[in-house]
Length: 343
Image (cartoon, rainbow, N blue to C red; front, side, top):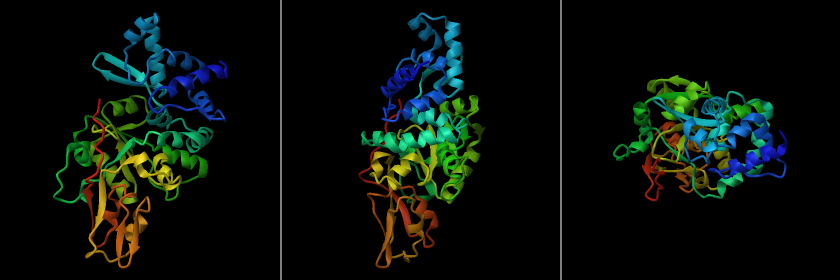
């Protein structure tokens, strides 16, 4: 199949969700050629846009193709991480996977140095700038409850560990961002743990069935969260009220975090900060532990106490854990943006 077909594929994906915009180097097409076979492209282009879910019967009726062939091809695509699939009893529903969260994350088991280099080139030269156009954060930051001011009344989506305990099924996979960095550079800045990308519900079932991740219990997931918190990773999930995933992000590898720490974009283009750190000046001893701990350099020492730049603060709560005087708490932002309702 010629590059023209892959160009057509890129254009089709680009119409859906965040998309897959064109580059002068054609790196987007190069990525697609690594992920999709020529047969995969033909099947993919028969599907409806990403927000429209269909069964194999519906697709067969719409396209005039044999149902058994359609079902076989859809299962093949979904097992390769190129198509999202939800099973409910005897009914299986399919829909297009966007580039992120989707094709990129689902390739974690298959990524090699060459694909890692392509991903990094694409993100750094095009995709990061595409994300900033929307001025809507794709992720929300979810601190662990222990870091939040005790008397705070929390709604369900703000209760990270409770949400984990309520999840129907949970999976864990390797972090694609840190795996990408290690394939390119050998390591990330602090050798953060890698297997801590959590998915829940239908997303978890997809990861488990496709061998992208493995099933774990709620207690195991909470242990992963606690270990990530201790390591200094930011807990973030899709900016919706429903808990579908939790990434544990580092500032040196995570594409969205790098948008803040390396590219200098405003945090709100990527991360919805629902909380903010507040420092008790009377308790603070200006030890600088929080300064070193903050992943986005939002804390500085002025005179004899620490000061938080709320415009930079993610509200991740990582500074709270490291404060020897317990002088830092998290409070809900009065000007917070509520996550989007789940469809």
